[in-house]
Image (cartoon, rainbow, N blue to C red; front, side, top):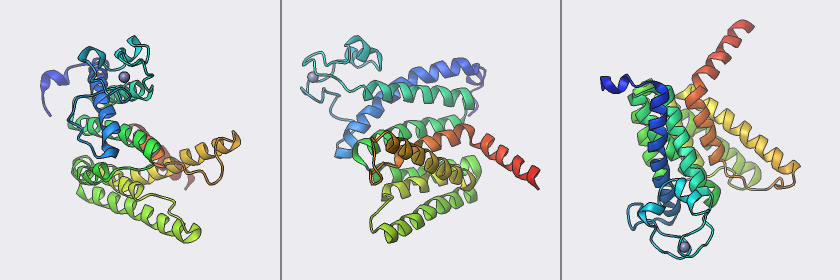
Length: 266
Ligand SMILES: [Zn+2]
């Protein structure tokens, strides 16, 4: 993209602009999170209170601010509104700010501006419903191939898809044989195939590694604090999404450090 005037905007200002637009995108994420698992349209009808069904007025639908001004309650029925709504808006806005700060006004930013809200949606839906919808992962694989081809070339993108998806398919098979239960959902397999297509084979291995480590740490923490037991079903999606975010922002640095250490070793 060569909008030369936009290219002159300093990164901190781009981050602020990204944050403001990110709040609005986060608001749309909330609509997707509420409606996608129920197979409802994300476009109609207008937002309404989940408790009393009253349509939400425009001035009560300002991201984060309305929640604070209404004291976290619906204006009509005074029922408590979940803090997940403003949290989703805030996290999406921060991710958009970080994308535009790091990648500037570029096609790369445009790609990650689509990816980040998708990761937020996946995280919340997987926590609430223990699924990653096909409606996200299947278009995600196509998007991953196209965007991944732009970022890393078609071959790396295709290998990333096969390595990521193949490895998870294999692990799911092994897990099924060992415990006779599905350990990893089909959604996780399709998710990692899409992430592999987007990020290429080296970074998708990093995503799997970071996802497994953070998931295991969370599980261990949960068990020591007695919040979880050994058989608790922890959704894997949020850890994979977190690992994907780390990989997008710091993957090159992490892999570069790893390779430089390998060279020193030899
Ligand atoms: Zn209400």
